[in-house]
Structure formats: structure tokens, C-alpha cells
Image 1 (tube, rainbow, N blue to C red):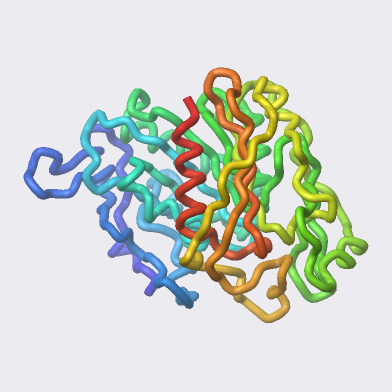
Image 2: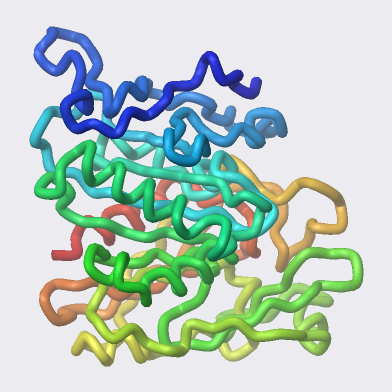
Length: 352
């Protein structure tokens, strides 16, 4: 199911060609010749997404580098329409199309007027030397194509190692000058240390960031004793931005989610407030199903319906948003369910 190059669209970085067919009745608008469809191309089925589909690296190509990425946008987008632009980064050892379905913004692009770029790292792990220029080129391209004035907000999204990478990028001048906010999906909570731990000698990762709200499943807590290495988001940015943190319940330590946020305090937000739980009757699309050694409560199991707890810090300075979303009975790699995804998008768009 992987697209061959003759079926891909080469992105032409020219604003003059950004919008095609906008005046023709019933004709879809195109950004830089990248065809739009709803449902979007290379979309997973509701369950058991084929590996060949997940492996595909995109429907658009940047001429400078000849590297592909996914570009999803509203099919009825009008010239001059304001949109929210999101750069979404996958976890280590995954691809852009896996990330598209882990945090399925592609299902919400039309309803919430989202332009979403989802690239893949060269070697499965984000690397400054191999990938940073490519990510900057994607951001620059999207701004050129839809017009700087039409990007009402630019957000970084990252899962796991993609979140760690986003946390690094947002400290650089290029992103600092553009960024409205960062959604961290198990990729670090601003002001809180986080660490990766092997579950055992055969498996991928155990994430321990902020504390746990309910007891871990059998065997989960003892795995923390084998922890090595530390990557954290405890160093706060030197400029204001919105921040939404989400993780699976089983990624947290025994003390539970903190009842405060250093970043919320920095932005002058009020105390943590719990909102009604988010209930999902439908499962997410993907998980880390590569081998039995990656399966378990902490690493993540097969997607299934769920419930998430939502905590916000109200009345932040200048209308910014700080929130925590903890998905109960979930680990590191179960794809986000539709309602919790939509609630995170609503939070993003509510930031002023």
C-alpha cells in the first residue's frame, strides 16, 4: 500500500500555486498541488492497521531535500482563511504515518481548520544534524503556502522522543518567534523531570514522569528500580506559551499527578481545576505491536475504549492554556481515542 514516487505530489514552494480551483464550484482546494481528501489518504482502518500503510512516509515532497512528509488540511480551505498549523513529531522507532494515527488530527482537520505536517525522522530517532533543517523547511514552506497572516497559531506536538525533540526545538530562535504552544504526549511536562527506563532486558521503554494516581499493575512499579538515564522538561522556557501534557496512567509514578504546575505558576494561572472526565466508546488506531516484548501495561497494550482525567489551570496570562490529560488504564503507546483527541484540540484552539 506504499505510494510509489509517480503517485506522490512534488511540493512546489510558490505561493502563486498554493490555492488551485478555489473558485470552481465543488472543486477541492489544493495547497501546493497536494491533493486533499476526506478521509485523508493512507488512513488506517479502525483496527489492525497494515504495517505497509504505517511505513509510508508521506504524500508531499520538499524539492530541496527530496524528503517526504504528510500534509493534511481542510478540503474546503479558502484563500485567506485563518488556520491553526501543527507540526507533529513521532516517537522513536516509528514513522510519520504512525504518529498521524497515534494522535489522529487528520480526522479533525476539516472541523477545526487544521493544517498538519507530520514528517518522519531519517533514522527513526530525531537527530539535530539529520532532521532539524528538514523540520524548519517544512514550517517555512507551510507559512509561505498559506500566508503568514493566515496562520493564527502554530503548535508543536510530540510523542515520547518526539516530545523530547519538541522541547528542545522550542528553545531555539526559529520556533520561539512563531510558537503558540506545545502538546507533549508522554514527552515531558514543563517544570517536571521525566525519565525513560527499560521494562526489562527485552523491551523498549518505561516512562516515569510525574507521579501516578492509582496503583500500578503487578510488576510495573518494580521496573523503575532498573532506571537508567534522564531526559527532562524541568528547565522552563524564557518566553510564554501554552502547554498541554498528556500521558497514560501507567507511565506515572506512585504519588500521582502533581496538584500544581511550575509552568502554570510562571504564567500566573489559578490553581489546578479538575473538569469532567473524557469518555471514549471507541478505541484509538495504533499501538506498538511490533513484537510481544513491547506489550504490557506500561509500554502499552492494544487500543481500546477509555476514560481520561482532565485538569486545567484557569485564567493564565494573556489567555494561554495549561492543562494535564491523564488517560486511565493506558500506557505509553496506545493511540489516543477520538474524544480525548478532540478535547485536546479544543484546548489548543481556546488559547488566545
